[in-house]
Amino acid sequence: MSLALTDLCRYPIVQAPMAGGVSRPELAAAVADAGGIGFLAAGYRTADGMYDETEQLRRMTSGPFGVNLFMPQPLLADTGAVEVYRHQLAGEAAWYETPLGEPDTAGDDGYEAKVAILLENPVPVVSFTFGCPTRETLDAFAAAGTLTVVTVTSAQEARDAERAGAGAVCVQGTEAGGHQSTHRDDPEGGLTGTGLLALLAEVREAVRLPVVAAGGLMRGSQITAVLAAGADAAQLGTAFLPCPESGAHPLHKQALTDPLFTTTALTRAFSGRPARGLVNRFVREHGAYAPAAYPQVHQVTSGLRRAAARTGDAQGMALWAGQGHRMARELPAGELVALLAAEMDAARAAMSVRSDR
Image (cartoon, rainbow, N blue to C red; front, side, top):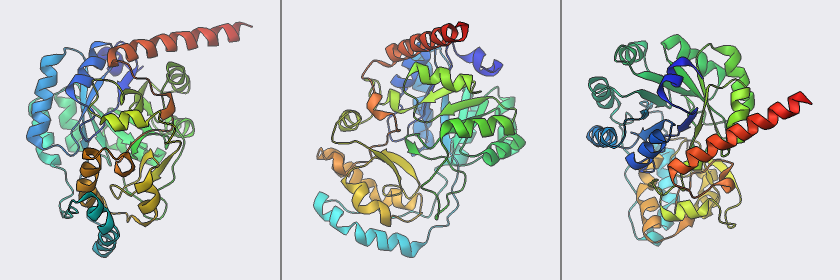
């Protein structure tokens, strides 16, 4: 591990920030207390809501934690395509007896206000999704004593982050659940990606920054593998999703190991940006027609997703999950961190035995 991360945590285990209420303070605190790094997700939160959760987390733990921010998005959506998609979803609105949301022209997610709060009230780590901040912003966080981590999905994005002054990069393979953190969504080719090990090797050769590896990691042996491949730490999201401290809907937690849900796919169906989730009815029926229009599609479908959750219909929910979802374990977060650490030790010991033969 890099010195900056070693100073923060006992184990090279980072709990991924999962927006939409999943990464609650209770989850981040449990991970931090167990020796990992817990994360809050400020995406879709108001600036005041982020501040309240951050202060709550400070009261709950003295361990290391971070806050994740969504970068402002360019308003490049084809409004006509969004309206066509709204028309296609009319049947869903009738079925769930809820109106479709209205697309908003704002795509900044309150970014500037959140940055100002975190600079005035520094936290150990701030990470960024969907882009890279300016050098001025990254330098300001460094001056405040905050480690900055930019999530990347290509070697070029990693080079851009290094040039801008990022403290580290989180390398996100296509196996990862939830949104792919591409800095610029490609409407033509956004539903593909590079696997974690290949991407990790590319980024390791491209930059000298500390690297956090993310994407489909569910076991300590996998963490050991990415550390051997050059990562300084590993970030896990789906592994922590079924923990009791997680704010995920019970149906979402159950779906991870439900035989009814056998595959994941990258889809724009729920948000307009590529995101990996369990393939359910909504993805099958609407995924092929969803435009590259984030956050407008997210806003249009938000009511549908809430209604599906209220009625207990997992077939209409956004069931974000990584490719390793079937290995999910329903354990308290602290116990999961300890188990992952033990599995890492066992994997290292097995590797040592094999190398001695």
